[in-house]
Image (cartoon, rainbow, N blue to C red):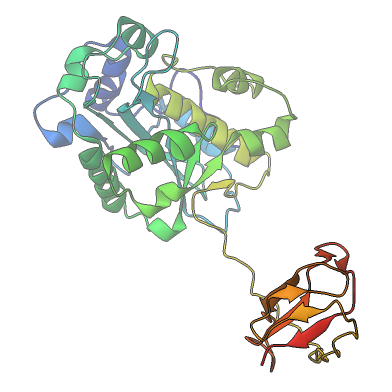
Length: 347
């Protein structure tokens, strides 16, 4: 089982890199003008998210194990933060923090992180409630990028890490991030998103397979798994990192990690062959009843012997008689059919 110590988990060995990640918790660093500095918090592949203390690194290496995840090579854990206000939901809600953590599906290593702030278009000024809840400041979203650019930056980050998109699974805590938030905003703004966001793993489901069913939020699940919460709640990157640690803990218990949600339509089953049509039922014309009260002409106007107006109609059933007109007694109901035997084909 891979165990990351609470004090050192997900921290790079390089002090400068540690400072760049820790700065978002202190809310002192604002996004720079450079797009790359706003987005990628990538670290050297040789020392990704490893504690600086050599003893701690040795303990982690001793506990490391190989996970059997034949379906995937990587997991990318996301946790969006969006515009909000106290009370009713703000409309339209927009993503303002786009974070991700890359996890090796074979080893459970947390390889690198990505984050960029996103500038909201419809509600550009954050509410006091939103800033208090997420810790995101107005200057950070003012210096952010459009959502389309954030998606492109995220895609480039994965490509730089050598991630094959067909061997990647997005992981979230709940279905909101992919099923509701990202899908709604992309549809609302006409933005094309990478296809890998259309399928995801809701970690709640494998977590419940390991720890039992029950309602708990992400922070409660982390603690229930025996891990210590690291960082600020509702900071998107901190939430994603804690979700990634929880994912590794669930993997270590042998629980399969599979796709649980999808926006891709399920293929329809192959249609069954149509049964052979039964032999066509031929309608035999019946002779007009002998009744001196019968009064009708060639055009079909008149009355039946039962004093009910004659009704003209056309055969709709496929077959030799389809399209032919006939006359019958108007004394009929849809449930009982004709009430007398009068029937004759039109000339």
